[in-house]
Image (cartoon, rainbow, N blue to C red; front, top):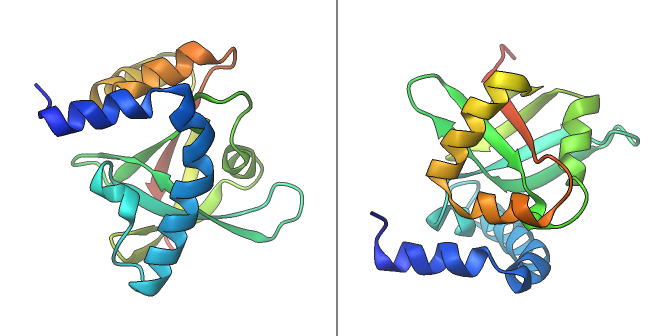
Length: 160
């Protein structure tokens, strides 16, 4: 059973108001604190583990840095990224970037790690989605609000 404080955060993060405000506030705060602490702190990681994803833009080819919640997969050295967009319509831009340019980099706990992203489909996606819902139940509310299937990516380390 989740601690009362965590349950409250999960309940608040499931609301439409949170979905409207969070995309404007949380990433900006994360970028600033991450830069000031030289990659050691992500404010949002106090609730969920987080990474800074650096991926090339799908159209521009320019590097884009995006703070994201992630789900580390214990004992595998991989991470799941959930393209929930806080339950807003439309896939987040970073998912299109990974589809176009799957080789990327994450900053995980202050270390830069080259990764390759793979969009999950079928049974593999179903299994990862079940794990994601157990990890952070508000993802179910996000999915219920949108007509699109939320994209899930597995990030695997690659040699630099």
